[in-house]
Image (cartoon, rainbow, N blue to C red; front, side, top):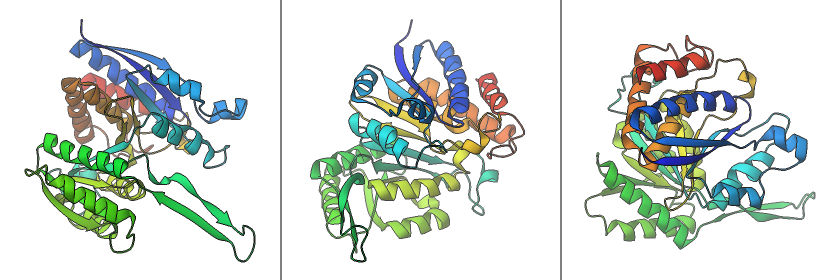
Length: 352
């Protein structure tokens, strides 16, 4: 009997439960094939729970989640809840409380037919964004001065610590080394304008780089990075950046790889509990229509298995997704796949 893993499952809002269902279907098949066990426990955190109880996630919930090997998340976002409440009270609280200080976003093209860029192949689009996930503008630090008057000032602080920046950069260097492809790490920032935060980032990056002589390094402003994502994505291998810039460029990365329907991400604590999710959100207009693309959630499940050490199972799932994307579905968009949500999950399982 192989290893056993306790998985906290948070289906969440909108189409989250639908894509998580298909992801669990694939994970269950992979666990049987590769001889390990998954012990899922479902938690009802999300908009419906908040509307009934007024609660998001409490400290006692966080302590309970610390007992699990990983978290598998569907989506958070409810049309009847004011924007910011669930995002802050659930997503950010999970990331900060569990110290998931890395957001890992692979950007990989599985089928060139779904790429919006001209003449780009799978070999051209295969890079990873390492986003700092616990500091920066997302700390929520700042204040209003003279609120509601003509002299109002809103101050939003990007809070960066040497410890937080360095551990993210070190993770990125080690990830680049282990990935063992181009072995090139790009720092994405804005050193010409954001002179305090990015002075710290650049100095730390250059100091840590001295310990990784096998890694080629370079730098690109964030605006230039978005341009090169479109014009020459083949230039990139691994990119490291801060919380805000990472949030922005990874959505562009998702479009470059074919759309949100295939984009998966991980919120990583290398020494603790990590969380894996499709990055496309809850897509409430498609709820319960059985038309949403579950492949991003399935890929997030594969990322979870890889992080847990079940590398062969993770690779098998990715290989099956690649085959389905190339041989079966007509589009990565909701309602245009040529198959229902459940049928796409079945296709992946059948190929496994």
